[in-house]
Length: 239
View 1 (cartoon, helix red, strand yellow):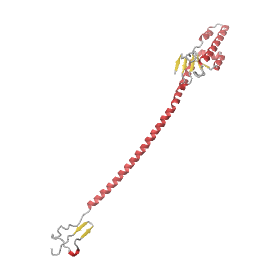
View 2 (view 1 turned 30 degrees about the vertical axis):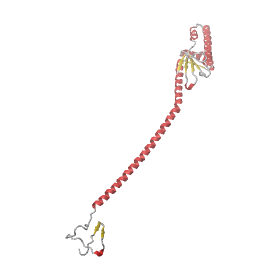
View 3 (view 1 turned 180 degrees about the vertical axis):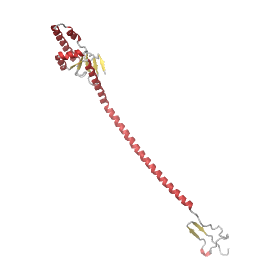
View 4 (view 1 turned 60 degrees about the horizontal axis):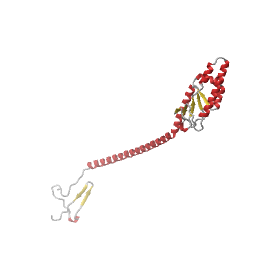
């Protein structure tokens, strides 16, 4: 962010103060360029008048650079470099071409002379710095969220694998049940196909007379067969 005519702790008020990220000192920009002295050079006629106007312009620039360094370079509050804005590209080019000593003195005082195009470029650079600073500031939060996201993905994968195991076990149980029911069905079919032979002792044999068994054969006798049990009735002698 930035602020126009912000007041510093020493009472100075730069034309613009660009806030730096993460609590870093702000960048001061001065736009009070001595344009009158430059106009005097352009209006001077003759070599002598131009020389005098140029000396006055050089002196005004040097004084202005010194004022910026004294007022706007505040230890711990502003950056150790400030911008001096020149409102014209042609003036900027003329200063660098014909007043090199002024430019060098400004650099030694940590004052950067910028034109409209350079100021815009500087603002874009500052915006990039701000963006990068915000990304760096949020990097640990983003990293934490990614870690938690990966943990959630790991839990989902584990639960899916458990569910896959349950499905596999259920499928095996169903197959076992089908095998058992198939065996039961086959056994039922075998039982159904069996034919039981023989008759009961109470049922008549041939002409309807019961079978007589001698007494000495015992009180009761039984004969087993593969198809069932045949029970015989003991008949007393003389009946």
